[in-house]
Length: 296
Image (cartoon, rainbow, N blue to C red):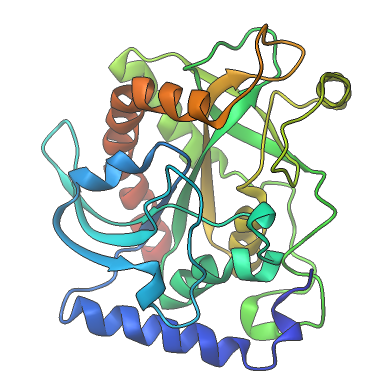
């Protein structure tokens, strides 16, 4: 599955989609901060004030979400923090996955589109299976690093310099400053925040117990079926990333019962209040960090 260079018209397609979004916003500027909401976590977007909602299927060349728990729209407006601050934000209420049949470069098309429009930091969230024996369903984990075991990368194929370097550095894929801001907010709110390595596999079948044992030995703390293609695309563009996993279930061989997508959604709904409080609290600090960087 190739990168953007396999489509000779990719930049034109990205800019056409971006121009459509700009027209829908009218005179409102596009926020510099975006959040991608994983399975069952889309309710955060319902808190956005003065929203402009754009269904994915209306945006030229955007893929369409086909998974339960993914509403499939952009919501652009102000997210209120517990302190009362309002932070301009773009929320992806739903995302795209390799297992839906989308190639890696199409999975990240919306990320690249918003990056070219001027988004400078993404909060990328997911629902994940817990591998670390110290984790419990309902825990929140800030991602410190990742393992890509899909065999796919959105940068594969011929290259276009307008998307960023051919060989982007991934040694600090998950921004340390932004992670520190999230840890500080979690402490202020009295929320337990785990930290660990996220592993992606293509899915959609869940991992076998033997695969989970392998992932544990490789150093994974949680596993899922998303996020990493988006992170790679962000880093190629020089866009900062904060990754958050909701531990929605324990992985196969750790859990004592069969795994289901319904369990993922149920756990996400149960923890939604803590998740939304944390993300709403950290967004003003993230926006300030982005503004400082732009002003440097």
